[in-house]
Each structure stands twice: as structure tokens, then as C-alpha cells.
Length: 231
Image 1 (cartoon, rainbow, N blue to C red):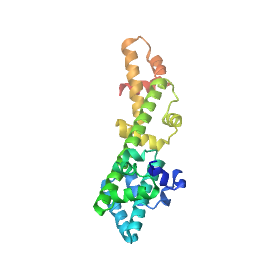
Image 2: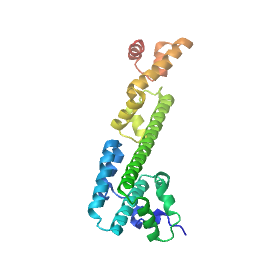
Image 3: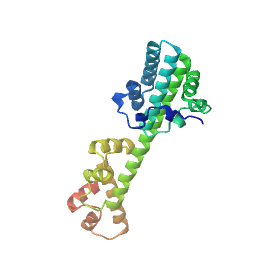
Image 4: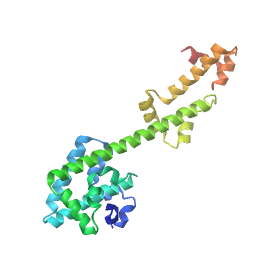
């Protein structure tokens, strides 16, 4: 029976492991930040630690396995599939039957310093890009949800940044930062512009009085509505 890398990671590693408890925390921090130069620097540090602490081939192979296991745990903690990202490491272990054979296969594949360094850098970069993509996707979904709330509730006078953030379950500062980054304008400006667009449609297509239009787009004060609309 082929042994999966997951089977030789210590059982407790399948639980979420706090960042500060991992041996590769500086590298993982660089991965989270997404700084390619910092990732490369920390990857080289891992190689230097590897050579400093491993005096024999067996120690080197064991330390190499620990690095691979560290990446496995990091992927698991961040809901990523290690096998999808790790490339040939998994395929090289598929023919292995025992735990020792798995360790030997990984040691053979990552046995020299150049291969090991390149693998760590490439692995770290791939994970970092995956994290970035996930964050971007989450941000875009949050912005879309906020815009849908505006479309559904723009006529309510009490709709506000606080209300929208409460509905989305995020902090005002985080949401405001992401919204402006994604749309190029603050949320309050987006809400005002959306209301004014709807008001313009009503002005052009109906005979409604100004105060009625104000009410229909969320303004209780007709004078303030007129002031904003004329701007």
C-alpha cells in the first residue's frame, strides 16, 4: 500500500498549529505577507539551519522530512491541498510502501542543497500566491455582497456603513479599507452616488415631487436631498 505524506505527519499536526509554535514561523510569516524577496531570504535561512543541525545523512533526511511536514501542516491549517501544490514530492512517494521508504524517496528528491532551496522557494511562492488569490476572492465577494445590500436597501434612511458591516460580520475599518481599494471610492460615496442615480431616473421618468423622490431614495430631509442632488 502506498503511503501518503499525511500519514507520516504526527497525528497532532492534523489540528491547527499556532504560527508561533512552528519551527518555520519566519518563512510562514513571509508567505503570508507575500514578499518574494523575503520568502527567498527565509528559505535560504531554512537551508542554512538544515545544514547546521544535520551532521549525518539520516539526520539530513529527517530534517528534510520535517520541512516537508511543516509545509503539509501549513497547507492543512490554511485549507489548502498539499498534494496540489507540492509537485513531484507526492508522486515520488506514491511507490513507497513503508515510512522509511517515504523518507528515503523525499531525501533522494530533495537531497542536494540547490534542489532543496529551489523546492522551498517554489513551494513557498505557490502557497503565497494561493493565499493571495483566496484573499482577493473573499474581498471581491464581500464587496459584491455590500453592493447588493445597497441595491436592496438604498431607500431606507437608516442604512449606513455600520449597518452594512454588521450584516457582513466585519469591522468598519477593514471593510472601508477593502471597499475603497476594490472600488476606488469610500462606501458612503458609493451609497450616495447610487441614490443619486436612482433619483435621476425618477426625475427623468416620473412627475414625482422633489420631496417624494427624496423619500424614495432614502432621504427624509428634502432640502438636504436637493443640496446633494445638485452637487
